[in-house]
Length: 416
Image (cartoon, rainbow, N blue to C red; front, top):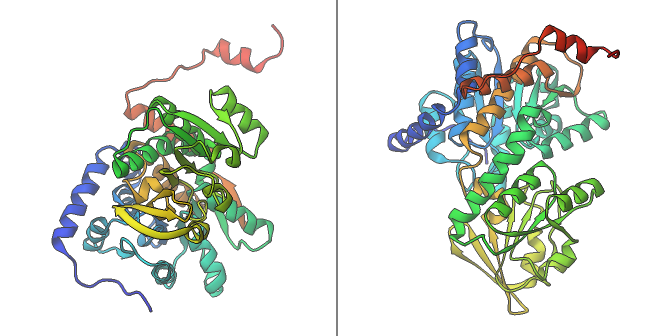
């Protein structure tokens, strides 16, 4: 089935979406600053930007800013449960083509990607690299026109680097995820807060006193573990990397294998970017009432085929909570279908955090439009990364120290 753009706008839905967008916009000083700086120049005039992102209010602020700077913007949702229909309607009311709906099926999801890619794009803004992968697979004739794009997530960057290694990637992609202004804040503090927001608003459960098992101690895992401890939980970390495992230990967490943690954990959170992180042999050892949630990009970390195989019945007992009644008599509860719990069960990262990430996305798209780069995965230029952070600090009324000439000379020299 081919998805087509809606021609009838639900005005009441669009009105509610507009309120959400306006609420987010007032807390996004970086995007506001970039809009004011570039508006007269209209740097994206003549460019067509295809985006696959979580379609909620903060993302809408980025898409509308790109459009106000001259771009034609076409968007698809990157997750069925993170798409907010009222926000999509508000964007459509402004004349933007948006292909998504809350709860879309897997087939619809890919149909929406195709709907975006049928447009004559020259810049891509991706979240998970599905848009990039699909254009390479199904629209190879369009590759020569693509100037490049940017990628938001750890998972997406891993995929892009694999494509580049295999000689498949046909245009340059900037890794927004690897910018300091992104991973130090979005991945750590954004994920740390939004994961627990999604879990607590969905379950209404107490975190204090629980044993929380965090799979993966990258920047996202660090943030989730940090907030879990602050809420009074005892945290167990599972890791592959020896340095990260030791860091978790030094941060006050226990470090175990998933097999060791499975029988004692109350809440299990996966943040690895890999598949089958929690699988049948772990689920079979879990105690009655264990809660499972994922904060990795795709819904493959908690392996649902094994959950189904071990269960005699599956029930939806609360919004975004599925009870898997295991054949051994126990029940385990999966949140948000195993999709990104912070977006499936909440509103995603805090507004002020996404202001940084989306500022990086905008600057990266602008950099792509102004530079001719060879195919590959590129870091965000350091000067852009620093400029975004300075803008954020200035908006917060924070000033930085400056070096005296004597201090600068001292730091550059080798003689006392």
